[in-house]
Amino acid sequence: MDAVQRHRSMYKGTTPPWKETYRKVYTAQPEFDELSAFEEIQQELIAQELLILEEYNNSMRYEEQYIDSVLEGMEASGQIICPVCHANNLTVNSHFTSCPCGLYVNTIGRNVTPEVLQNLLEQRVTEHMEDCLHNPTFSMAFNTDGSPNLMISCKVCDYLSVVL
Ligand SMILES: [Zn+2]
Ligand SMILES: [Zn+2]
Image (cartoon, rainbow, N blue to C red; front, side, top):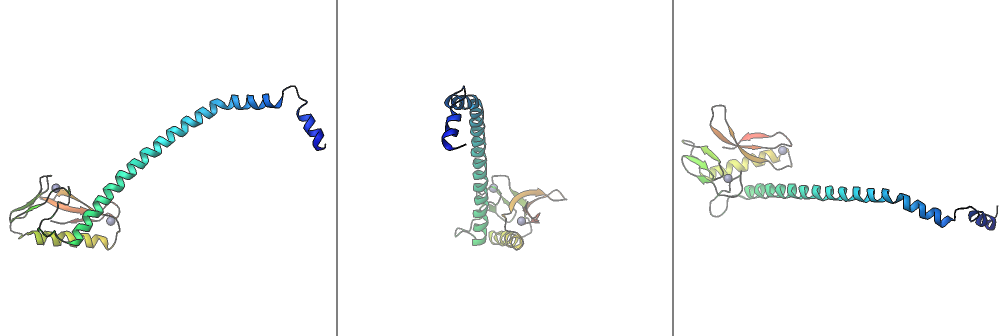
């Protein structure tokens, strides 16, 4: 079959090729709709995921900034930003260390000053950093004797230590 014959036979059928093509496109239409709906949902999901990821990254950056500030040392004002809420300055006196967010550690007789606390924070952060690149988090936990402690922990490497 040469090219001319082939060309002729293509147009010999009862159904003109354009009709065939039209039917194909037409019947395929619902699939296209489903596909675009599916794509739309997927794009929405991706957008949501990106948003969650962005929030996660922001919180990670937040942690990182705090860790950086711990390592940079105390602010000139001698204030220590609360490691739990990152929003308030800690109150450090001869009796306790506290923050309006709920952080409270009894330090009677332990001679805790802002300098001492800063050193403790720095030590723990540095200690964790030797084995793990992730940012540790700080939280309050109760000791076996029921007294609250400030803990540093990392979910990635299972690091857990008492800061104060
Ligand atoms: Zn706080
Ligand atoms: Zn870690």
